[in-house]
Amino acid sequence: MRFNNKLKYSFNIDEQTDFKSVIVPPLILQPFIENAIWHGLMPKTDGGMIHIHVTEKEGKIYCIVEDDGIGRSVSMQNKFKDTNPGHQLKEIQLTQSKLELNNALNQRNATIEIIDKINNENEPAGTKVILVFDEE
Image: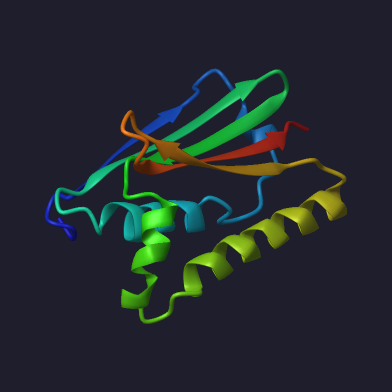
């Protein structure tokens, strides 16, 4: 309602996986979801879709946040309109630092991969963030 139905979303959570055995730092997905909404989807006139997938494969938990927004390159071009253009980048850097600290403290090997999606016309077509966590 807040976005006048511009925002559509889906959650796909693997029901076969016991997520109680996975240590994930608090609010680790939040900045990626927030960035997808505010910087990827809201600038589009017709809004867009955000997908959140959580699944287990070969002893690892995959958390994927994917949107069909304007893409990071277009968002960076629009940053002059933002009152705080460095805010988005700082959030991602803080999240990466939090994950690195968690890796060091818990002897884990969690990773973040950010993929800029491209459509058939070689134009930005959103962003895909993949976070991978080891199971206990």
